[in-house]
Image (cartoon, rainbow, N blue to C red; front, side):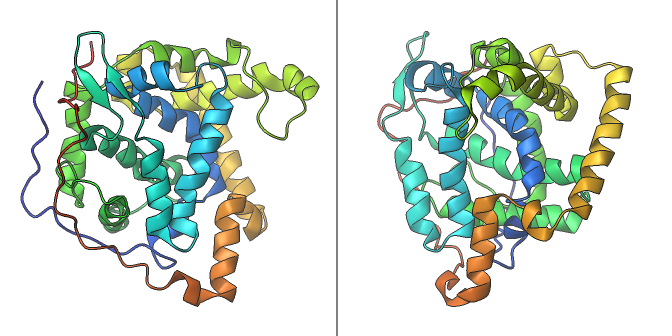
Length: 311
């Protein structure tokens, strides 16, 4: 498998914080509509598939896994002390390591693996606006990707796989489809998650969940299919018909209209809105939020090997 090689001039950064595009868009409540899509894209990576099978409760309680993952990541953007919050997210992955079926060691903190997960977060910002909001212009995409490097630097990890410009982003995206990603046990589970006996999400009474689980999660799978990149849909073997597309066009227009009519506080996730309100009353708590200096690239975690190719 070929390794992605960055082009020149990649070290372009933009600061995070309340004036960033990441702050403006990451907490958009419409992003929850494609949460399953983002998770599936991540889990198409063979190392993440293996790690979930060996170290996660994803197959027993996927909603719990999503809830535990999303909140700390949002805290990096919307709460003070982003470096501390980033360390919490990073260190959560330290014990996630093992040996794959072909005898290669893996580690969730292998920078190549962690970078793919990171890229899917700001790709999801772009996708949320593309499908359910106002599509970002080219300059906005460039700024968002540059902010993605500032975001990565909060982790204090190796910048071996990292970049902050749009040209490398597009080349990397195509490389991952050609060389790394594929269908696996985790993506198959996600495609049929509405048929699984998934426990109720936090705060939802179990009797109500038993009545609504199949339609609610079935719609989630359908939205994931609707919004999947064509390359992912092909690798996963997911079908999408003209009738599906016509129905989705109606759905996405309804989402856009509902969001525009909703009060501003309901347009954002509660954690994000709380951070926005805190900034209004205590802006000093968020200073400074410029990115930390680039670290000297440390070695990959002990035992980490090049990312295996998906079969």
